[in-house]
Amino acid sequence: MPRHPALSKAVRAVLQLTAMVSLILSLQACAVVAVADAAVTVVATGVKVTAKAVGAVADAVIPDGHDD
Image (cartoon, rainbow, N blue to C red; front, side):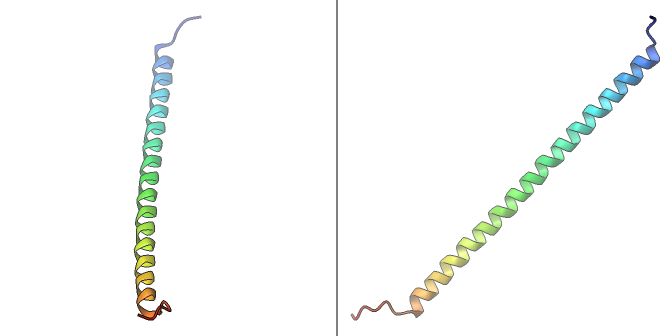
Protein backbone atom coordinates (compact mmCIF):
# COMPACT_ATOMS: atom_id res chain seq x y z
CA MET A 1 0.00 0.00 0.00
CA PRO A 2 1.64 3.28 -1.08
CA ARG A 3 1.91 6.20 1.32
CA HIS A 4 0.34 9.48 0.27
CA PRO A 5 2.35 12.53 1.43
CA ALA A 6 -0.69 14.80 1.11
CA LEU A 7 -2.73 12.55 3.39
CA SER A 8 0.08 12.42 5.91
CA LYS A 9 0.30 16.23 5.94
CA ALA A 10 -3.47 16.50 6.34
CA VAL A 11 -3.46 14.12 9.29
CA ARG A 12 -0.55 16.01 10.87
CA ALA A 13 -2.38 19.33 10.38
CA VAL A 14 -5.54 17.97 12.00
CA LEU A 15 -3.57 16.62 14.96
CA GLN A 16 -1.75 19.94 15.42
CA LEU A 17 -5.02 21.85 15.25
CA THR A 18 -6.61 19.50 17.78
CA ALA A 19 -3.64 19.91 20.12
CA MET A 20 -3.73 23.71 19.85
CA VAL A 21 -7.48 23.89 20.47
CA SER A 22 -7.13 21.58 23.48
CA LEU A 23 -4.33 23.72 24.89
CA ILE A 24 -6.27 26.96 24.41
CA LEU A 25 -9.39 25.53 26.04
CA SER A 26 -7.45 24.19 29.01
CA LEU A 27 -5.76 27.57 29.54
CA GLN A 28 -9.13 29.32 29.43
CA ALA A 29 -10.42 26.91 32.07
CA CYS A 30 -7.48 27.83 34.31
CA ALA A 31 -8.23 31.51 33.85
CA VAL A 32 -11.88 30.97 34.75
CA VAL A 33 -10.90 29.09 37.90
CA ALA A 34 -8.43 31.81 38.88
CA VAL A 35 -11.01 34.57 38.41
CA ALA A 36 -13.64 32.61 40.34
CA ASP A 37 -11.17 31.97 43.16
CA ALA A 38 -10.31 35.66 43.35
CA ALA A 39 -14.00 36.59 43.42
CA VAL A 40 -14.71 34.15 46.25
CA THR A 41 -11.75 35.50 48.21
CA VAL A 42 -12.97 39.09 47.81
CA VAL A 43 -16.50 38.19 48.90
CA ALA A 44 -15.28 36.14 51.87
CA THR A 45 -13.05 39.00 53.01
CA GLY A 46 -15.94 41.45 52.67
CA VAL A 47 -18.23 39.22 54.72
CA LYS A 48 -15.59 38.78 57.43
CA VAL A 49 -14.95 42.52 57.71
CA THR A 50 -18.68 43.27 57.78
CA ALA A 51 -19.29 40.66 60.45
CA LYS A 52 -16.52 42.09 62.63
CA ALA A 53 -17.91 45.61 62.22
CA VAL A 54 -21.43 44.51 63.10
CA GLY A 55 -20.10 42.62 66.12
CA ALA A 56 -18.19 45.67 67.31
CA VAL A 57 -21.24 47.91 66.93
CA ALA A 58 -23.43 45.38 68.74
CA ASP A 59 -20.93 45.13 71.60
CA ALA A 60 -20.87 48.92 71.89
CA VAL A 61 -24.66 49.34 71.80
CA ILE A 62 -25.87 46.34 73.82
CA PRO A 63 -24.97 46.44 77.50
CA ASP A 64 -23.22 43.33 78.81
CA GLY A 65 -25.11 43.30 82.10
CA HIS A 66 -22.07 44.04 84.28
CA ASP A 67 -22.39 46.97 86.66
CA ASP A 68 -19.05 48.63 87.12
